[in-house]
Structure formats: structure tokens, C-alpha cells
Image 1 (cartoon, rainbow, N blue to C red):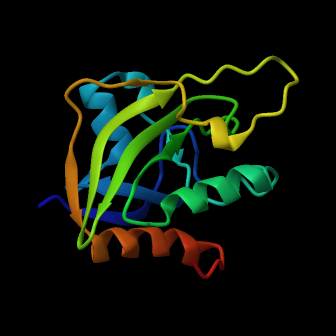
Image 2 (cartoon, rainbow, N blue to C red):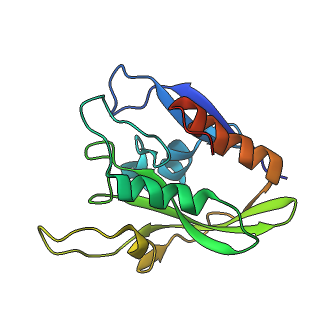
Length: 164
């Protein structure tokens, strides 16, 4: 059984701003991907955060979509999990995970990046995120206790006052 948790920390691209980070098996998720896939993933921040630096926040549509995807419904869905901290929205790098709710267990089946292309100036529609993707080889699956996974999600909700 794998472990998922949340801790506060600093990432390379966020300067001195402390933020919540996702840990899988005691390793920060962006560090894990940087070791296994590419150093380019180091410093990506959770898509589940509700802020960047106080002067920028993701769109309401993007936040709503992310929170909808975190809800478990005994199905399989694609969940944005990490984003580029430069823009903190869906216009840049989006790491996605295919999540399956299997009762008392939650499976992160595979990881990838979203490859949805939008024209410059075109609205980014969150419901298209994950429809065009490139899955990584040899990452996952991870299997978590549902209660632990839900506590992880709840930690992000609590951090900005959402009661999810």
C-alpha cells in the first residue's frame, strides 16, 4: 500500500512562499517526477492550491474543474495534479493523473502531461484538460487508502477555507 500526505514546504520556483505539497511514499511529488521523468518537473506545484502569490489566482472555472475531479464517484477520471508555478493556470504545464475509485482504495493508475492545444487568446475550457495527453512510462500505479487520500484533499480545502 502506498502513502499519500500533505506537508508545507518551499519549492524552487516559489521563493520564500511556503505552500502545501503532495507527498507520495514520503517523497514530494514534483521531486519524484523530476527523478523519474525529467528535471523540468521539479518545482511544479499542486493544482489543488487556491493561490499563487496573493496577486494572482487561477480562474474560477479552472478551480471548479479541479475540485470536481477530486471528488470520488466509483469511477475513473483524469485529475490535474501539478501545475507550472509561473502562471498557475491551465495555460502552461499540467501534470495529470488517472484516478480510479475502487471502494476503500484509490488508484493513481498512471501519470502524464496534458497536451491540449488552444489558440492564442482562446478561452481554455477545463473540461478538455486530459482529453489529449501523453502518458509517462513506468510511473505508477499507486494505491492509497481512500481515507488517507480524502484527508490529503481535505488539507487543501482547509488551507483556503473551502469545506469540501
